[in-house]
Image (cartoon, rainbow, N blue to C red; front, side, top):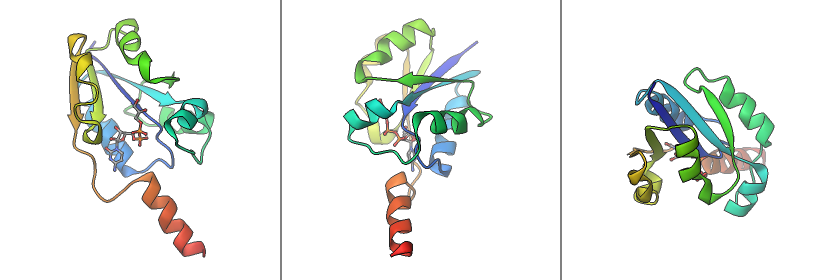
Length: 131
Ligand code: C2G
């Protein structure tokens, strides 16, 4: 079984996230999503609209996703890769180069980010509509 892992906040789930998860799953047979906890989001400077539990439930409903685990810090990736016997680590290419050190443990692949959609842009559009 070829295991793939990816990390993120996945707030206000949108098609950019889904396309990332779809392509990540195509790289193996089993996709693990390490989902940023509410506490880690604060560390990342992100104020997610949905709680961890709400974001987890939505991710678990996606057919490409096989397991959701908590992402609690920046440093856990190497441990996760070893613990879950991961073959491939995947991120959108807004992170290109940032996790290359993991290539001693597994394949590291950066997939092209879907243009013109982001959680931030959704929030801005909604604010404009409701003002
Ligand atoms: N993504 C994408 N296309 C978009 C938006 C996001 O491909 N239009 C990808 C991102 O590149 C990332 C994943 O979807 O790989 C999740 O995006 P975020 O929730 O914004 O993740 P981020 O806050 O970047 O967290 O330790 C890593 C961090 O937890 C990554």
